[in-house]
Amino acid sequence: MNRAASTQPIESRSRALQWQQAVVMAILYATPVFFVLRLDEVDDTDVWWHLRIGQWIAQHGAIPHTELFSTFGAGKPWAAYSWLFELIIYFFFRKFGLIGIAIYSSAMAVAITAVVHQILRRLNSDFTVGVAITFLAMYTMGRLFTPRPWLLTILFFALELNILIRARQNGRIRGLFWLPVIFAVWTNIHIQFIDGLLVLGIVLAESVCATRLPAIKSKLQARTMIGIFVACIVATLVNPYGWTIYKVAYDLVTQAASLPQIMELSAISFRTLDDWCLLFIALAATAVLARARRITFFEIVLLAFSIVVSFRSQRDIWVLTIAGSAILVSNLAQGPTEQFSIRGPAVFILVSATALCAVLAFVVMGVTNSGLQTKLETDLPVQAVNAIKSKDWTGPIYNDYNWGGFLIWSLGRPVSMYGRNTDYGVERVIRSFETWDGAPGWDSDPDLVTANLIIAQAQAPLVQLLRLQPCLQLAYEDQLAVVFIPRKEQATQSRTAAGGFCASRDKLSNGPAE
Image (cartoon, rainbow, N blue to C red; front, side):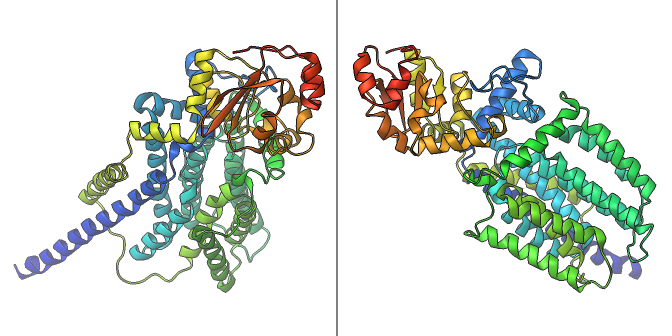
């Protein structure tokens, strides 16, 4: 009687602790939804060409192998390497409208948070530590919660790291058999499956080195890891483009480094708090490894790899954020209290509370389809597109890099350039930037000279130069965008006297007129 009575308060306290932790975790998991909704998802111009590709695949029941969306690359061999993501994002858009884009990003943010927290909880059972570092990691990655395929890459990377950490801890290989499945899906979603292969290669190298160097310890046999690695390589070949997907990956890596004009590809500028949070994670992880009295091969190489990748390009900060947080947490002291204890009914509370908090985030932020449409019309050339459609002006189109994706979606026509920079080569992309800046030689840009429809941001320096060209007519203008078409009638003598641009167009047909 007394023994039963004494255990009852303990069980009550345990149950109360589980529910409290469930509520805290629900808030933690749903917080990144606010990071998503503050980013104005419809302003992400790349999502629009992804939507157009997804729409094309859904309509034709096939995956394209030649370029369909730019005049420069028309008919050339081409890989829709994110085709599965494009179908996913198109499904969300078709099902829910503009708000579907935000739903996709929010769902990915919640899933990433949950998996990262799972990794940190496995490495350190102190509840407070796990929650605090997870929040720090999500805040650091907050800028990346946009409707891109890289969200699924971040999720798959976290899942892979979770599997590898568990296998390295207990030596059990059963979980490793999920890796080929992950890579088979990952390869069809985003080209950065390459990063996951490199991390798997680090574990493989550790197991091989452990057979020859006594200072390096590994619970995984080299033979097993070689088999898993080969299986994952084979799994990556299960895609519409076979081994050529690796050539696409190589082109992306080599060309991205040469395009600092694209902000997401540039190095970290350390101008915002999240940049400094990333630096803190890197320094803290380095410090705890330096204090270790053993050779931690995997952690050292993983940290070095993640620092190089993340400091090289802003869009890859997730690698260092996740890997650095895991290394940091695994080397922190674990307190005797506040251990993670959620199980049974508390799991249901966690899932339900997370979903409720995510829905409340949409309500609090006032996210609706009508509001997103208003935002879209404010930030992208919706009215200019409507004018082009009503007048039936046709191309070839000349547009800037940023608006290309939206024009592909809204006009349904090929454009001169959009976010797939590897399709044009570094030189052509840089030439486009210089032309829009009105740099010397702008009037000999072949894409501009051959265009019959020029869609420009109203504040672009090139617009002021085009206004002076007698062979062009300003057909539409608002505060955001301007549209130029060839003049209906213009004497050859006037065009020649106008200089290089109009003289170059003498060799071309006048094109459609108003």
